[in-house]
Length: 155
Image 1 (spheres, rainbow, N blue to C red):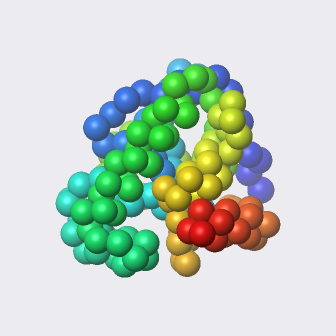
Image 2 (cartoon, one colour):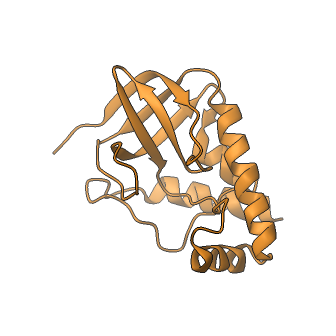
Image 3 (cartoon, rainbow, N blue to C red):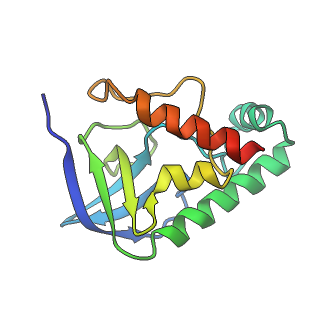
């Protein structure tokens, strides 16, 4: 079974394709797109209208409001990643459109877990069905914690 890879001193690389739950970064000598595990921030553009409608329904807001939340999540993530951060991954690929390797990950900033920060601030819900790479089989405690943070954020 593959061990967790820890990438310390990662540096954010601004890219127009970044979102609240995925972003470009330099880790060592490589460039990657990291996709946060267990959360999903709304899209920031109308590239996938069906997805935006689905996300707006989930948040119980309009599509333009969902785009605003997505933009706020993107800005939040960029702000949290201005200083070096640590990424934990099993180097499991995540689907995406880029040619750069995209990996599911947990991200630790100086203020703690990035996914938890997004959920706590109402910027990324915990989807009912989460796509989790097969090597990440037991994430129930973290998912439960995120769902509790989401309930608190909604209140």
